[in-house]
Length: 188
Image (cartoon, rainbow, N blue to C red):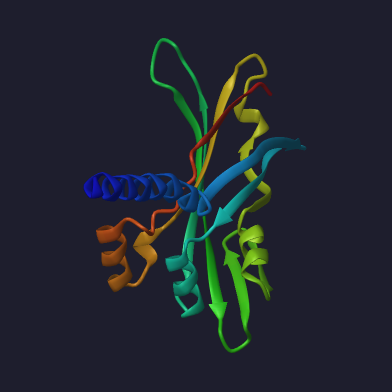
């Protein structure tokens, strides 16, 4: 009988660990909340909102002065049933998140991104997850009688980490932050 009691305790412990593991891991990652293309004059611009949540390892690295680089990718295709899809646009942008310990401020910067500094990490992550008026494709490349497929994704670029952290990222897999691609159809 004492073995049965120990077995129950171990079973409950394993069950609790199995149920709490994904719940704790769900708090970190990148989730795309919304994305849309708006036409202004002869250009389509991308507007999107993403939730970016860092894990404890990434937060500790940021506070110790390691910059994190995030890659946002946008693809625009014309699906074809008789052949491969026609790629019309494939653009990427790199955004850097860093911390200045002297000023105690977080900085979000990059190409086509207005550099902004804030005092709180939550505010910096919110800025990191915003895409406002990113030019993606010209209107004259599209036919209004066709249906097009747009895909948006964002991920942490572990190749930009310092070498010791790259090895840690490969060995543990805890540095992987990536959104599920958001795919939607559009008719101009």
